[in-house]
Image (cartoon, rainbow, N blue to C red; front, side):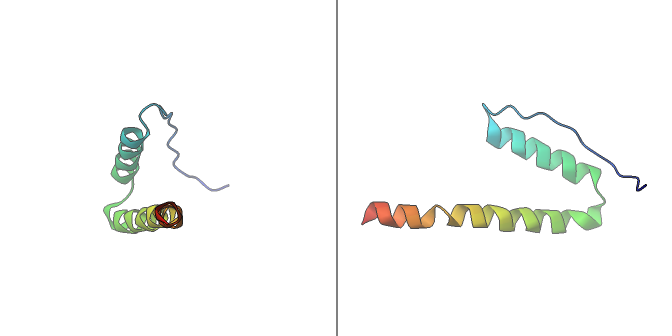
Length: 63
């Protein structure tokens, strides 16, 4: 068996941006400082990919 730390949370989807920001802060506060940059870079990549999915739709709508 492997020991692991878990964080359980509930998000209020009526205010998702603030809730996600608070969640990220909680996670960053509970991991070693040496891991924080890696986590933030992974999140940056995931957000960039998600935002890129909107670009073709915006281009098609403008045409």
